[in-house]
Image (cartoon, rainbow, N blue to C red):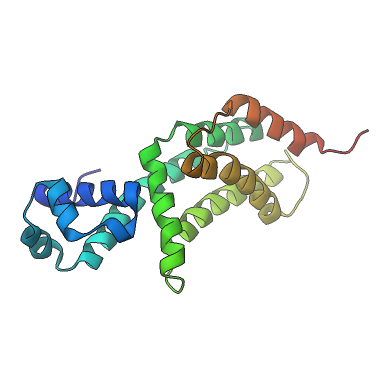
Length: 197
């Protein structure tokens, strides 16, 4: 992905994100950002006009990178089995770096600060849900699963994935989870239910 920013802008955006991910929006002053980026504070205003514009540009830049990774993880060719596809989702999310998950932390802060704005977290959620629903509709067409409400199934799979992987990685620094074992256990419950036969 070719950067749309010059090297100075890139340094400022990287410095802004570093401060946002470690300390949040409140601590991201232009003075701190300039110091972290190794530029003059005036340069920030020359390049981005306002602090608000810089923060929005930074969030959008990193959000787009993260969304591309999420889309890649949840993409499918149509040849995968359900086990392969859901397993790939779990594994792909587990392999994301902590830096990737920082955009979710920042998005969660945004939820508190700008309730009326279309939130980044909503776009991430809808991307995952829509890909899952599309996959399950294909599985019904292929006769692999019975005709179920694909949205409900997608929400269930999303909930397990999002809660067990994404939120644990974002908020629980000591999250130790064997992704393969967890994925296998989830798929067993999904296929076989919880009722004794």
